[in-house]
Length: 216
Image (cartoon, rainbow, N blue to C red; front, side, top):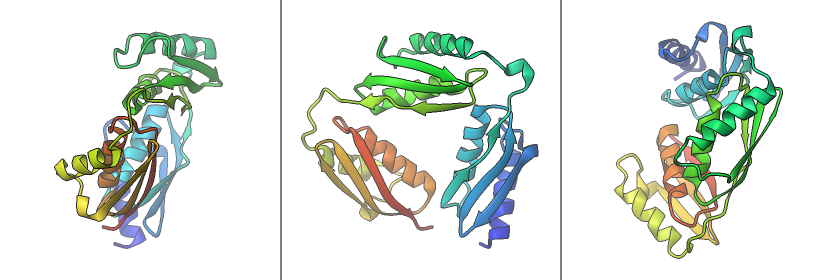
């Protein structure tokens, strides 16, 4: 697929996604890497544009340079955003209480704290990213599991073999002291994300180093 053809596929995908106003999004493609530029009305739209682009066949990477420009009706003070974020986290049963702190500067939310699982860290991120007034989110939460890291590699390899979305024969897993390294080839960005998600789901994992190459 040529750069021009891939660009058209990405633009069509963005236009098709109902959660995105793609009118001010420009797309550049070079060697299967897509750069998104322009403006969107919320941080949620910026993330959605990246997700949709990564889902297009042939895309191997995305540089998301979209600027979040809030409409006046959606602007909030940093104090309002911080209070809303803390309240939202409080109501999320997946995120343990009083383990995450929130700092906000010019609409940019930073999450800090220590949690036991990666899925809890991801849940905290999802909780605040869609709040009104948020321009971006930095997730600095540290994952420090309380469980043993024994047999992490075997557990991840087993999860890969059970997954219909991952060709386990093409992915190599190395694990040491909670750090997991994935190497090999996958057929799509979606398969790469699923491999990373499965690795993070193993008990005791504190870091996943993704060295997988997307080879359609």
